[in-house]
Image (cartoon, rainbow over all chains, first blue to last red; front, side):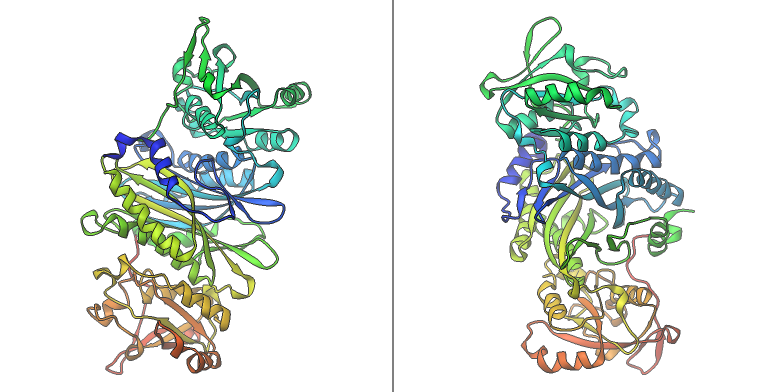
Length: 303
Length: 303
């Protein structure tokens, strides 16, 4: 059987099944970052994210600065989605020896821009020859025990919320997005967030990841989902990915408190888009025509 | 200017110069792993290492198991060279969707073999489509403050030592080497090691890295350097790389104590191959013909 026949989600589950970890690992494979017990008050977060030329970007359509920005930004977004603070990054880069030093400088400047904004230390990396440009960033973050937000905590009765808007990110936003770190930290510090993920592979598949980890179902409302002005259609917007918005769930009373006390003070909009239901009620969206349609864990997946 | 015109060592120094880190970073770019202040007694170590098809290996000449073994082994070797213990690993893999699931399973089995031997938790990773196979492993380790071994601690008068033997690794050893973790831990716990590195790019360039970081020179003796039976020649053996042996320095009295009390009890041979001298005395080897030759920081470098 070839890798493309089995699919990315099944592949990850297959590998996860046979890997053994010790009791210091609170969460291994299957969330935005691994969670490791480290001190009495704080957990360590550990994540990585690989960008490959002609898969994630085309050299002619992106500046070196944007490549660096995106490579680091994706990892910051992952740490934010755990409720944590990013601290240290390593950069592995495979690059053609025929590219100019200005090109490499541009990549590092893009990273340095984000690193400075978010107080991240770039502490090393690795460099190798490669025909296609490859950048893998690995990142260590930390999170107070009480602020940890996993995919697996969604409960029946929770409401589902999203920051910003989705769709059409490929037209430009994915190259200059600001990871929702400030928003995530405010949420986990001031409210009880039951589950959280960042939208990288599309709303449909990333919400499915929460549902799968939490063993619940969901009901979404098309007319409540905020689409970006760049979005082509509802169907594309919920499946395209690269939005890097936060998708999270919280109890109804907690959400009421959030909307009453906090929303007006935020720069970033937050919208309620649906609710968590029992698993046997399925994963559905009520379309604008009033019809209920089933959703599946699809989106942009690599295999 | 193109990347290949500037060279890997100059490139890394160029990037390092403009990166700012905060006071929690004890050692950033420029050692086998980054060193981060974490708790009162232990530092955190953070490293990564990228393998690329047709640069580091050819698919026809290596089994998936060996690819996995080597990818994880290189990182363990880096953590060992800091005097530390490897704990957690993430695996980023770029792979063709046309490869079989058995191939991917083989890679993970190779990693799992080493991970089990050394008590390392594989806690996650990333997967993407790629024509050429790319594997980037990032690893977190820990080291007691007193046991940390940097490249920068070599002192004039130190003797230079090496585990095992070097040369000809490309004929097979590089695919099945056992990282010298046990040896490194014994050394840092029971002896005062002034500087240490693992030999990945060749004795000549890796010793040069110690000299450069410590601002000292060195004198080597050809007849004291242990060559593997697979080695083709002295000249190739000191420049080929992929040996994954430990190269370290210690004071003369400490070395005497080591040879007197410990060497006979070890499975792995350790040889004294030279001494650290003042920087202005240069970097030289006394060949078997009695002639002194200058060495330069060369070896297998990617640009």
